[in-house]
Image 1 (cartoon, rainbow, N blue to C red):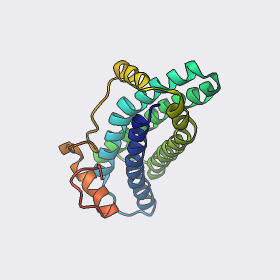
Image 2 (image 1 turned 45 degrees about the vertical axis):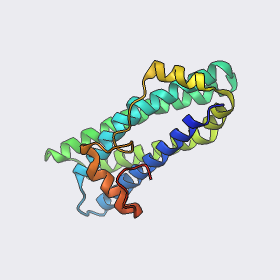
Image 3 (image 1 turned 90 degrees about the vertical axis):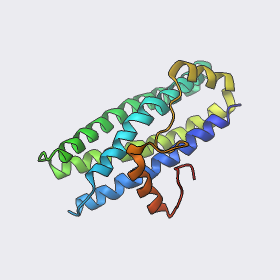
Image 4 (image 1 turned 120 degrees about the vertical axis):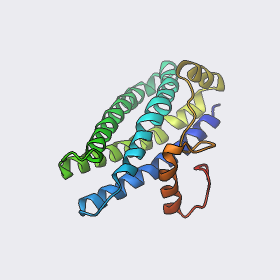
Length: 191
């Protein structure tokens, strides 16, 4: 049974929720016409389009594929989650482009940026809930450590640059903001 990788994914999901909370807070403030830190949000989205989209989701896909090959009853859910991984990447890329334009002083429709942010956050949250309730229990029951190792060999296993053992300089401001919001005086995001 494969429990440690599931624990890792659940921990990563909790970290992603922290970032989605920042996005949602930003969206509310943006809609209200308040001043927001575009650079901070751009760093959040840079992370979301680099770590989850390049490592977390492909690793899930590899393990999900293993499950679907062995247990046909999970095939539809695996296919849906794979489609969602692509949609999340596309929405994330669009939001990064919006934020790059804003930081570059381009004139952008407030509503378009807010919609991109809200759509991204909603899809990501719904997606993680579906994974956690549908596939994580099935993977814990039916997949083995050898399946995990084969997936890591196939996809790679990136080091989390924001919530790993050390925070990359690029993400220090975002990390401090998360720590401030949750009342943590932690040095890393592993608390």
